[in-house]
Length: 350
Ligand SMILES: [Zn+2]
Image (cartoon, rainbow, N blue to C red; front, side, top):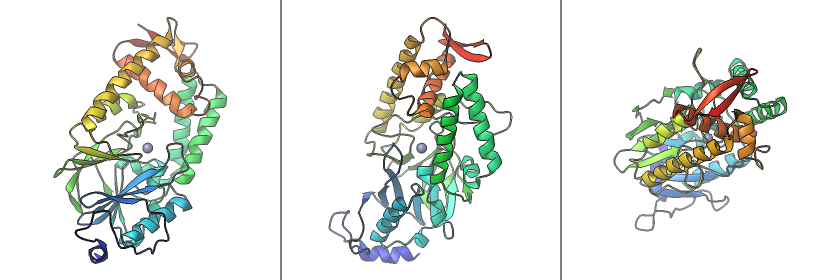
C-alpha cells in the first residue's frame, strides 16, 4: 500500500504527533489533526447551518476515510489538500465508510469511487442509487404525513423544495459491503459497527475495542442535540419509524465509549455523562411540549408553531421533526393520545 511508505517519511518521531513534513508545500488551509493512534480528523466547510463537518482518516490495515464531506468544490479542495499533507492522494484511499446518508457526509463519495470500496448500512443504498421512484415515494410520504398532521400546503411545498435542494450536495454511488450491528470491518480489524438509528435510519457508529474510541457521526454531538429526523419507512407496509424513541435507545448503546468523535464540533470527552444529560434534557423538553398543548386537542403543526414561534418558518422540517418526535415519546409513555378530527391527527393530553 503506497501510503505506508509515504507516511513513514513524513511523521517526525520524537516530536509531537501533530507535526508533519508537508507534501503540499503550504498551499492549503490545514484543518487536519492527529487525534488518536492511527486516526486523523479533517474538518471541511459545508453550506449548511450546522457548520463544518469532520471526516476521519484511519490508518488501519487498509487506508480508510470515514465520511466525505458535501459535494462542493470548496470542501473537495480542502479535503484533497489536507490528504496531501499526509502525502495521500485520493486514489490511495482504499475504503470509504459512510456513517449515514446525509449529503454533508456522503457528498464527495464519487471522487473516491474508481479506487475505493464503499462500506455503509444497507439503508444508505437507495440514496446513492438516486432512483427517481425512491425520491418520488419519499416526497409523497412527506406530503401525506404533513397533511395528516395539519401542516399547510405552503410549508409542505417549502419543505419539499428544501429536501430536493439538499440532494444537490449529495453523491451517486453504490455500497460494496453492508455494515450491520456487530459487523467486523474488513481492513479495520480492531473496529466494529454499532447500529445507531435515530438521527438517520442509516446511521452507524464505529467502535475500536482496544481503547474505547468511537466515531459517532451525527449520533452524538457535543454542542448540539442531534435532531431525530422524521423519515419514511424503507420497506413496504412498514410504519413510519418513531425516530426519537429509536434515538434514545441508540444513545444508551453508546454510553460505554471512552471518547466519541463526532461529525460536527469537538470530541465528546465523557460520552456517558453527555448521554445521561441529553436524555434528561429530552424528558424536560417533552414535558414542556405537554404543557404547551393545553387541554384541547391540538395538531403537531400548531404545537410546533407554539414551541418554535420564531424559528419554525426558517426551519419547518427540523422543528416539525422535533415536535412529532416528542409527541411520539409522550404517546408511547401514555401521556397523550391521538384524536382524529375532520381527518387531521390531533393530540390530547390524557
Ligand atoms: Zn446527519
